[in-house]
Length: 92
Image (cartoon, rainbow, N blue to C red; front, side, top):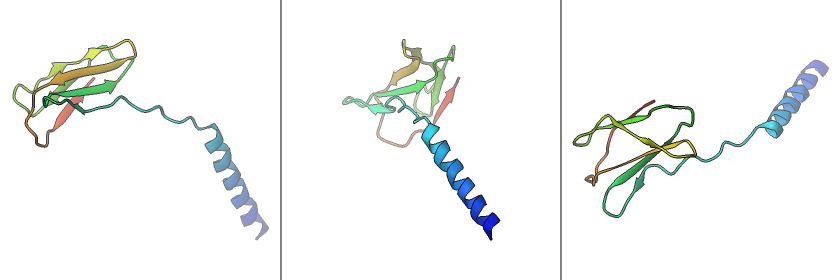
């Protein structure tokens, strides 16, 4: 019985210690962003990527190469698009 209590204590201690050292993940870029004219801006964070392309099932859906900013966020604005569900594919 003492061994089980000791194990539970060690597991609880390990979980508490791990949670203290865990770094919160920074929020990603706002994506997709629907603009007032129904254009849509897609953003994707990939600082180490050399090229990122976006495919979609809209007319002239791609692949279209995205543009990288100085923070390593890639973006692309498409449309205007009709209101419906789209399938997207990101290739990096």
